[in-house]
Length: 207
Ligand SMILES: [Zn+2]
Image (tube, rainbow, N blue to C red; front, side, top):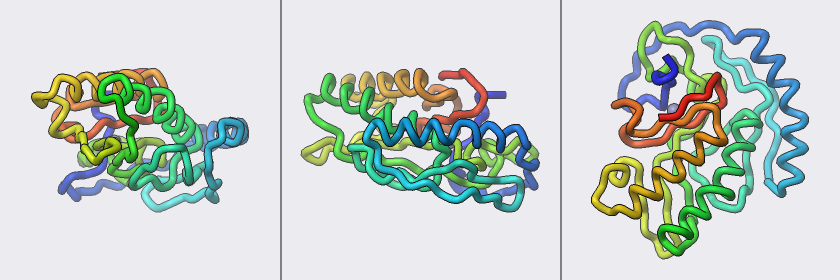
């Protein structure tokens, strides 16, 4: 089920032997990566290409990049497939900053994430398929810091009392769904109570 696309485990450390990377995924990564590098360079996004890595358990980071400068500082971003990185950089510039201007009249000075690559099954459930995190193809966004220091978190703000915060978070989630293949929020299921999950796996799915 797409709704069970997994996220960084929060305390549940059970692991199952996941399935191997399919050749199709590696081929797709190769075809997409060169054009993606060109796009990043043209859009002024600072990045480093990372060597392909195949890890145990079927996990891999193929065609991955390290984002260095997307105009907004971001915590915990490590290996990301290039299409994921491209979508993330565009989302931060075209959606997050404008939404912050609209709802708070301020810039976002930091986007906080729980990270990208993690070799595990969806929602860390035994026997489930590998999460897109196992392919460096997903990112979990947990919060935002406004200039002046105000911190907005998905956990406290999604259903919190501040209507502007609720609207801002929903706006950036909806905008994420237009740029990533999958977008999950606290409305998706209990696993996502404290972050938005975005990935470039098979979609579209937005909740
Ligand atoms: Zn996730």
